[in-house]
Length: 284
Ligand SMILES: NC(=O)c1ccc[n+]([C@@H]2O[C@H](COP(=O)([O-])OP(=O)(O)OC[C@H]3O[C@@H](n4cnc5c(N)ncnc54)[C@H](OP(=O)(O)O)[C@@H]3O)[C@@H](O)[C@H]2O)c1
Figure 1 (spheres, rainbow, N blue to C red):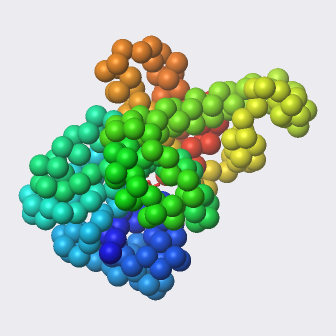
Figure 2 (tube, rainbow, N blue to C red):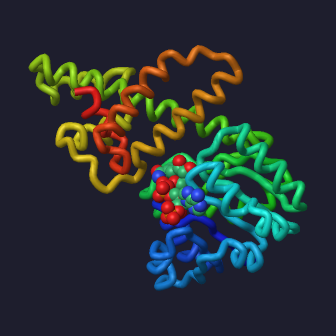
């Protein structure tokens, strides 16, 4: 079986390397061709045509920015008609509604569709330690588990299509809220003249502590947001997906709207493509 991998951005690159390391044959597409060259050197077949990938593969893995990109790449008139008898595994972060709409379009073209968004970033992708959440049927889960295990040893079936996408947005809402909350307290204690190490010592012993605080502490203290694994613009995308979905189900989103303003400020400051810990600079 040959895998077609569409989208070789930050995560796609790492996930493809992982598949190649366990000798899964694949053909990769990316809109920007230059990002494919390194993959050719490590054994991937590469192409600038999504049509060619769809024709050559039984299973398509998508690691694209958003639903609009997915529609452009696999649901154009020319591409969609080729989806018959192919399985699409959507692994990027999109909303439950978007995932269900894409599922419908794939099924209309006689293809099969499941979602498998992931928690974790480039280091976890390199190590095969992503947390893979699957939205699909039990049968699909059993059929594709072996492949998904290359990305994370214990893929978990969450429920039907849409449920894994919802879980992923629930988790990314925590990334946004926890990080901005930590950045706010860090900025506050720094400006109040508190010894940050002592602040961390107390925080680490308390029930309030989350490991992500230490992961982001040095970047925030150094104001160094270089070489991101997850850029600020994608966090804003995910907040917006959560807000849109949250409005549909009528939950109170006022707290997250405040976080959104802070993340937007970080983007205004020029940190769109930098690590999202740049939230700190938007606060101070
Ligand atoms: N980075 C992380 O830590 C992480 C973790 C879990 C989930 N995710 C999610 O996974 C997805 C990919 O993330 P990433 O970090 O790899 O993002 P990225 O580096 O920005 O890569 C995005 C990919 O989508 C492609 N793309 C965007 N718009 C397109 C269009 N209109 N037509 C064709 N291709 C298009 C890009 O092509 P070009 O190269 O041509 O721009 C690139 O291959 C996102 O949904 C993200 O939220 C990311």
